[in-house]
Image: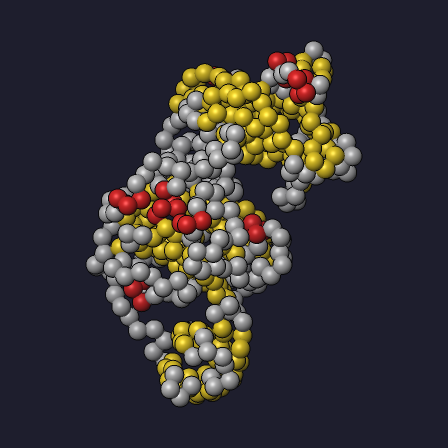
Length: 459
């Protein structure tokens, strides 16, 4: 979205900042060497002219120390379609500024491109040595980048300000569990009486009714992991299959920050405020690397997740290691315990078809816009508590029993039932039965759904 460049005084009043200084990241008028050959003069002002090649367009600039209190970036830019075939109206101007090894990011943002010069004023996060700038022309319909578009960009300046702390819109108290949660996409007994947190804030698109898109999560923790159990009601669940845009497909996104930071107008700190994505039917276990944006979670600290789908709902369970959550920060994961506070946000992504987004729901973000991926202002808060009260072991699926010795499922009342394997594939469908033989199934873990009850069993 294009923003009008305000005076620094107006920006301070609008965002609640106190202006503290400026740092020039790149000035076309001072570039030397090969980059100087790409500088053009338009109306007496120097601009760097860049022809973008999908996501492959980067320049190396003289290193610039960007102070930690840098909170936004300003510059003038325009876009020309060139040979790309995409007009300015069909394109977002994308800019990313990082240090030499790409481990820390000042800004990573796409904003509406314009055919005439416009002023951009974008939230950013300082505290790095800026060395590389990536440019792209990004299609407004998705994440794809174009080839052949031309970007003209002027002096890029980082503005340092004093951030105003934002209060969390909502808080959730996380109960401690004495035993590790089994990650199988089914609610463990120990979680049965843990408080539900409804995910209801529409951040993008429209939601017709709760059957269209709704859900809740529960959370627990132990010394090693934060555990999440999520139920999503969706009348047209779309499994990932061969989709190529995970952010536009059914699933959830999770945002965590071990340092509990949220600021008015603040940008997401991408190397420390981690973004995780779990798509329906895209689950991994053990130490396999998830095909998702882990934004800093190391391969030895990988989240474990599992998904399961039935007719009009799906279920996700995840264990996120504290070491991964703390990666990139100075928080000691081994000392996390009762009283610890952290940022947390969760989004439900609803698709109407493969790679076609319908809506997004957030737990904490109540702004009415899709903010979680770019701003930390609206993140909620997790407060770690003790175990004990409110946590009980309860029996599940009292009307369904399974005899492994006899390979037989029994139902207290005649019922229609579906049996799924652990990937969510339907393997048995039966109507008005009091029992089902499982002798035809291969050995493994299965789930039977009958009415409002479901039972996990091992063949």
